[in-house]
Length: 204
Figure 1: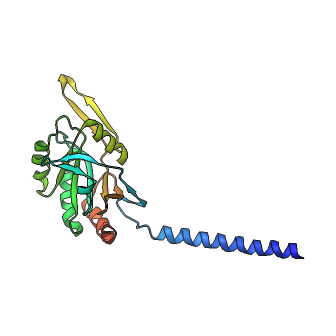
Figure 2: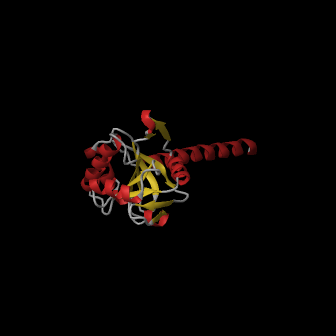
Figure 3: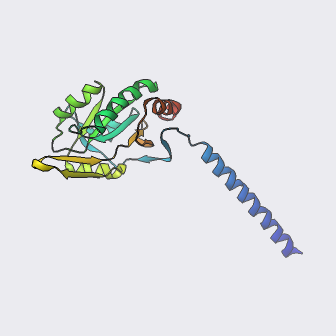
């Protein structure tokens, strides 16, 4: 009898644990925002480090990246189409989102040509508040890998070259943690609405 009672108790406990686990999983899932144009990450992803140079020639590290939510895009100033189109849209998205102090950062995938001066002229043509970052090619590659952005130089006839890269836009909170990603095609109104819907989660 004692053995049967013990098995019964353990059986009840197992059922309770299973129900509790299911409830916790459901609660966790329901706490993840459902975006229409992007994906909210189940867990924020913290950057290991950052050692770049901004468009004014000043060091740009994790310290500079914190304090404000940021939309990060990897591109380059000689990009013929994707980059200018995306940056023009991000300028409108940042304004339409209504998120206080939301900034846009372009990290170049072409540090050989994109000096701070070149970046400043380029990004400020879209919005004076835009930031640009360049740096050593090794650091650019490392940062791109950390974001999961592939970079590939493609040589062109005549000695010129272009750079293939992802068109993904990353949303960082004010702790410099990746919290959402937006994949092409980037649409202005849906993306702005998504960011607006998670505004309270971007400020720690």
